[in-house]
View 1 (cartoon, helix red, strand yellow):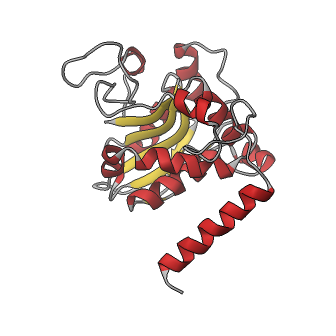
View 2 (view 1 turned 90 degrees about the horizontal axis):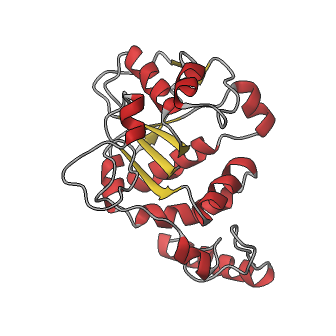
View 3 (view 1 turned 180 degrees about the horizontal axis):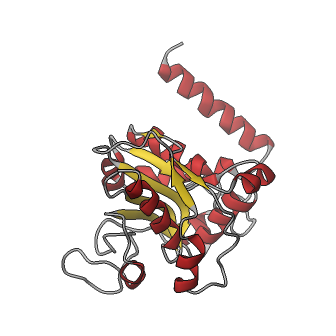
Length: 244
């Protein structure tokens, strides 16, 4: 069976499934539209997609107005991020928040089909990832056993598949840091300090990209970058699904 026939059969099966079991928008519950599989057309139009230009060079956060030349946002400057460059596909707002929460807390892996479309609309990010090793931010082992999955691993697998990269679990979380929602930037940095360790197969000279679902202050990603640097890697890069 050729690849074209396989794609045709997959599309046909998907269309039949949509007729039998119509999808609801993950953001508002209305019937899904035509632009994405898991958003109605109204919510799809409100998705806060980012662009390649006029954004923080370290995390991809869009700047208000026009900024000349590469520049880091206030969060990345305050954390003094130890990674090199970064990008994000969405701002964590509106329908994007529902997407992240569905993936993170409800295990809605199917929404990755829409994340794929978003990534395919960013050729700059695909090029940024090509030939790299994607390193998902790990959960504490007990938390992952309880949840049954790590959404950052799902994202890393998808990004690697789309960009011709590879995914390796090179970090372990050696301490359960709990939720950081109510903590300040300083408290977050203290909370995740030394919470990660790199595995022995980290190598100098390879290009690593840390992958996470959402970045808020960057403290967790910075702690992960510190662990890779301590293991002998060069400064990694960062890619997140959304930036708060």
